[in-house]
Length: 180
Ligand code: PRP
Image 1 (tube, rainbow, N blue to C red):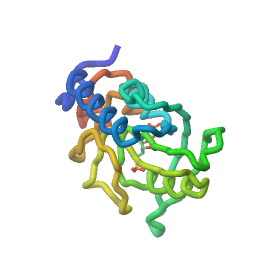
Image 2: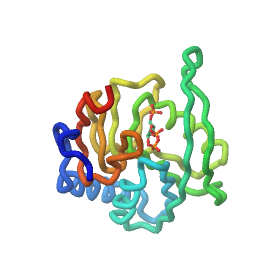
Image 3: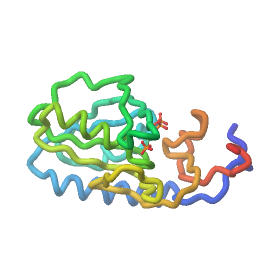
């Protein structure tokens, strides 16, 4: 069982999240009316958000999965992207939305965007459940954002600490003594 004492303030309850995800799904459905979308879920963190968001989208959509890791280099701000698992469908002329749980430095999303753009999609947008703009190292913004957050260590709703806490149904601040 997760130690409840490791969890600090709960920022977003399951009810808050459900309401916000519904709003995002509605916005995306309206903006993509008459089109088909491929949601590109970036593992692992965005599995929960993608599952919920996809069920709030009412235009035809498929879901594909990628897993990547970015290496930030102190001298090269864009870093580089290692693909651990790629999507295995062609995306040329398709409408893609990359789904992330959080944008921090922006390096992962920036590299992903560049890489997927080379595959000639009809369009490519970015959707992040959480956005930490104060941590940004590269100039990138998501087209759809659930919540803008301050620079705290957050867990839950897909976000982990040492692979745990992803299954919490809320987003909370992890207490400093757990990771320091
Ligand atoms: C997290 C998150 C993003 C990335 C954001 O993934 O899911 O992919 O970091 O950070 P950035 O904006 O600084 O690049 P992580 O590498 O922790 O893997 P996980 O999703 O498997 O937890």
